[in-house]
Amino acid sequence: MSLHGTASASTVKANVIQEQKLQELLLYLSENSPFYRKLFTKNHIDVAAIKTFADLPVLPTTNKEDLQQHNNDFLCVDPVKIIEYTSTSGTLGSPVTIALTENDLKRLTINEYNSFLCADGTAADTFQLMLTLDRQFMAGIAYYSGLRKLGAGIIRLGPGVPSLQLETIQRLKPTAIVAVPSFILKLIKFAKDNNIDLNNSSVKKAVCIGENIRNTDFSLNLLGKKIGEVWNIHLYSTYASTEMQTAFTECSEGRGGHLQPELMIVELLDENNQQVASNMPGEVTITTLGVEGMPLLRYKTGDICMYFDEPCACGRTTLRLSPVIGRKKQMIKFKGTTLYPPALFDLLNGMEEVLDFVVVVYTNEIGMDEVLLHLVPADDSKACDNRVRAYIQARLRVSPHIVYITTEEIQKIQFGEESRKVVKFIDRRF
Image (cartoon, rainbow, N blue to C red):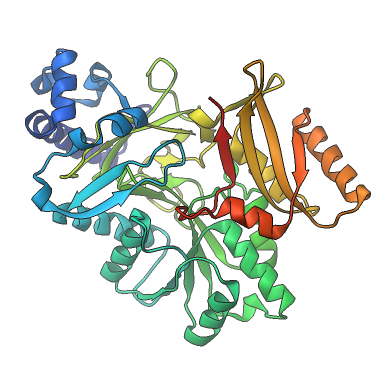
């Protein structure tokens, strides 16, 4: 979707297709969605009058709370047509169920097929999947389905266990991995401790999920640098959510995740629900195209990004999204300073004195945000503690509370019984 500047011929064509699909979606929702039918009636929306992107602001936005409170009312098909039930991870409250029909699963396959193509995947590749394929995790089934359509080899190894991951790499020789970046660091540490030279392995690229590896100027952040300094592989960043049923994936240029315009309309909105200009932060607001089971219209994800609409050096002219700057509801107001978890993660990942961490935010007795850092220190010395506190104070200009714990203790926090991904941020504010 191009909202500013002069659009190329391919962008104009994409916009025409999007607007046609938008009109089809509005009619579909008015006929099949209990939630949106009520919303249209309440706001006196004539869906037939919505023709172009310029008409979008007429439509009300929806958000996570709507999905949590009215989950079943978003379903547009008879339950007998549901093939797969997935759910969100519950990072920002109770999990939400997203139901998919057979057509939705096919669309999900196309989405991930396009994503792997964007990340230079080919049928000659073998991908080792270092992530869960159970627990209603949509991404797991999406990666698997997309790779099957691509014709690539697949190794479904699951998350964790660095020793097994590296043994499998040595034995089956995958050319690529799909993994959380912080876990790639654990692979690197295990390889170093066991005298394994990763640069002599078969793996040449990594599709990174769940965590930022870049700053907003597209340079590698500290997490990305730590990987790149040791393991000479090409890193591709991705951004997606269960609700989107669509991914933004980097090409080899590493200049933002590419929009798939046939699958989604994206807006970046300010506090007044107005479209922001390119290179300015706004809340990612999505409209799914071609979704049958639970389509979403102007759904505010809570994620803050920037967009870029100039053509990419790879030749694509699609809109691109920056790394996530932060989540709107996770913004921390701490002693007059505004913080987002990704910035804290970047700071802590860059400290040799800190082996692992969990950030906890809670409300103090006067209703203000407080920050508690659970840290695994490199050693128990007073000198290490002094370096940690001095560095954090210098970088943040404020001093959060710090508690040192063991690796075993932090793993109990990071991996709860119902958790399907590493928990690094806990919000206990009321």
